[in-house]
Image (cartoon, rainbow, N blue to C red; front, side, top):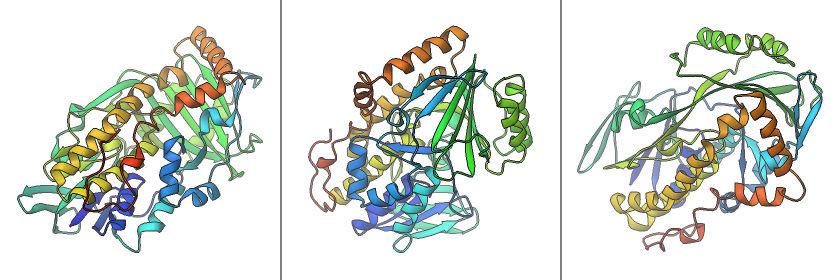
Length: 399
């Protein structure tokens, strides 16, 4: 069997890792010319830590972890309002998405074929497999194709249809970029709010720079994701009148080389497979911030590989994979629906109310309860149903 995976961020290389462990040939195609570095922090909790252990990644992830400590909510004068402990935001371990992608790539590059700077432009299914046309690499044949190419999945667009059919806008937008750390932060972060606006500044193990996150509420905006000047205009317009250190942050926006911008949206599909084509991670069930997306995407890749190896039948394997992950995906989407109003409350009164909630949840009494509740999505898939190197046998009922 030869499987083509679209996407070399996290879900794609994780799937490649487990398929290779089970003796399945893998090609990974990635639109970007090289691995994307940086990115926001992603955390692991609960059963997701067991997945890292099964991949022998715990030490590597901890060596590259952000090491984030507390994050402090401040007012317009920079005075602390609430202090949030590390466990509140960063789970059991947190790592930048780009660092995690590099670790996964290093673990799979010798066994898998990686093709950078190319993308899929056409998919033709037939009884013997899928004929794939690439933008630059001509045409090739594969037994199966898996889209692990994110919320704006090209594979999904080709096999299911335009993104707008399946995307639900949640009323908020987000942006991120890096600036010099002139805030004196040391593995810590600051959060500031005005009605409908959220600003986050944090510095992790790279003390020379600080990551900036901007969140704002808005009706749907027509924009081109590749039009940097248009995005700069949108952000400048939205945050131009904000206080605290926002003018200082905006002054560094124009020179930022790693700016990204997207809306809070979720992907809802009735099925995650069409014949010999399947989706995993955000391509299938994007939840948005707070939905446990990275850990669940890696878990989905693990289960999909196990199901394919156990059955040798893609129809049965895809059905078992979806049955195992659907509950977790739904839970993550439910959890993420309130991320926008929580990160950027719409009124001054709601900001105060949110801060009171922060104080309660981060208190010594309630923090352990919050941590257990936050692991709900992470613990929806019972990994013991899928032994590490299971081949040609039937897994137990997923749970």
